[in-house]
Length: 311
Picture 1 (spheres, rainbow, N blue to C red):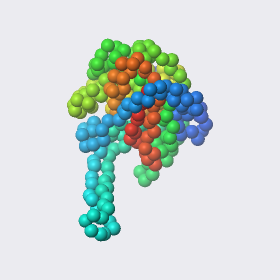
Picture 2 (picture 1 turned 90 degrees about the vertical axis):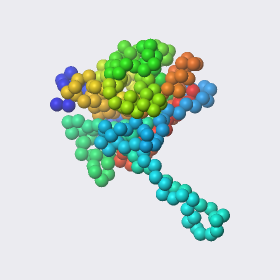
Picture 3 (picture 1 turned 120 degrees about the vertical axis):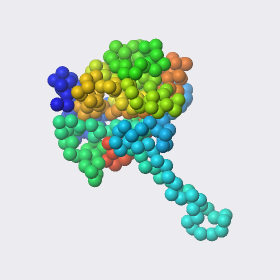
Picture 4 (picture 1 turned 30 degrees about the horizontal axis):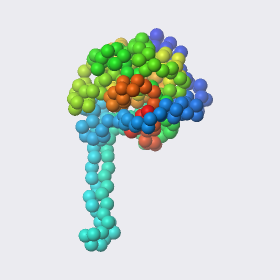
């Protein structure tokens, strides 16, 4: 059984199946309406731009623990190639390719990423994800509107830590403390950025410290908060999103299951929030415009993103 009875009840309570129609493939991203975007634009006051993506190269966070998630492999396929002929002064081109796991770097998970009991979000059959076409329903190419107001919830700072302790289970009380630190009112359609400080390990070139061992993260006890506040998307500075090891060793990744499959809440992982957190701590402003559309990979269950926070 993927979910015990109490989590089945939670999933039913926060389910958004049918909320935006039987054909909907966007889930909570429907909450990013014109008003939500305008609120984001109003939050961009100074023009300061803070990139939130990690590097894309062979030294990324993947260490082979998740099958198929390989770090980007960059290969040159043409180096100063003279395609048109001519002498040494002719115009030349250099081209390259990348082979990678779509969720190996800073990325958004699509709503086809998680299924249980034979279904993905909104009651589409899990079998709509196929070997030849990928996600024929809820594919990441549907996502074109992750632009709006974002709020940084610096949970680590709110609890007095540089980095949350390994395996720290973020509770609703922890989220409330971070909201109080931010000094903002959460609005429907907001995008939430959760800082644990875990990315500090990766920035220090400690990939093992970032990926392996116990990790802080969200718990099932925060799910109602995201539903109650009508959050459009959530991103975090860890690889797993939720606490690891998981709350119940017999239930793997329940936050993924309920947020993605039942709520239709788009999740992002491997966001580098360190520079943003420093900027917010310096000026006391924790809201911003976030521009963070994923690459429209047809049939993708996730895709890389190069998000930029504008304050």
